[in-house]
Length: 304
Ligand SMILES: [Zn+2]
Ligand SMILES: [Zn+2]
Image 1 (spheres, protein in one colour):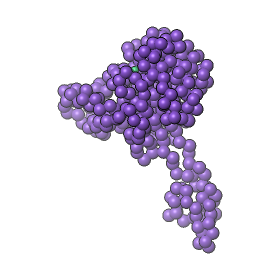
Image 2 (image 1 turned 45 degrees about the vertical axis):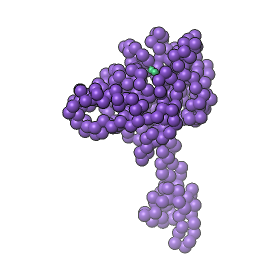
Image 3 (image 1 turned 60 degrees about the horizontal axis):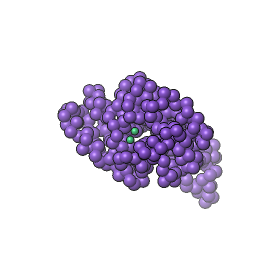
Image 4 (image 1 turned 30 degrees about the vertical axis):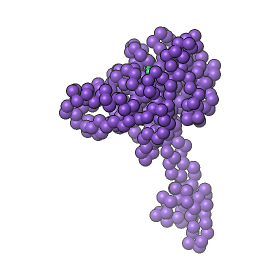
């Protein structure tokens, strides 16, 4: 099954035409999850031809404008488009205090419900779960309460080997049990071990999103072995003092986290507007962790 990550905004702070503030859309198991919603999100959605009819949940990492100022515009537009499905927003509880008065003013006849879910950004815990996906919070260190998000596909069922199932004449009503890993006992009482009848489930995918944060080794155990890690890389090494002071990370620090956590791939982003090119970010990160990619506006990653 396809999994994609769309980068709608890859920058920080001021919107500039080459990079808008942060917004990602993760497509996983036929669902869409929006992660942060900076100003300009709607424009990028149109430019990239992303239809959001499978978007039910938005996760906001923290209440700095470059991560949430796009929300009220987006919700207003969903209203104009007569959306009917509930929209769930997972964020620090202060977001509801900020957004509710705007909703009450601008969106008096909204055709759908906006449902807020308070996230405690200081805890690493399960904050969302459905049939096939789990989302955990990742506590980060920043100037305001901030957390990242770890998306994990749940393990699916085992795959039936058709010829074997036919050979041992497994009744149809038992197939679901077999897919769940049970052995099969024939009418003669012979036990056929599950591994003879099935192959392993499709490997699951994990994506961790960490923005914005001071270099923080505590996240390593949480993002251990993930398939894809997005980690902010606001600054280059030459501004490492500035990174520390503003509670952000450098590209090299993002790569250190990726390396220590043994992730498969690293995406860096949230670049300061002081840099005209991101070439050096990539160089500095790759010197520590080879499988590094640049987040860039309007770029999509195939995660599987
Ligand atoms: Zn930011
Ligand atoms: Zn911030």
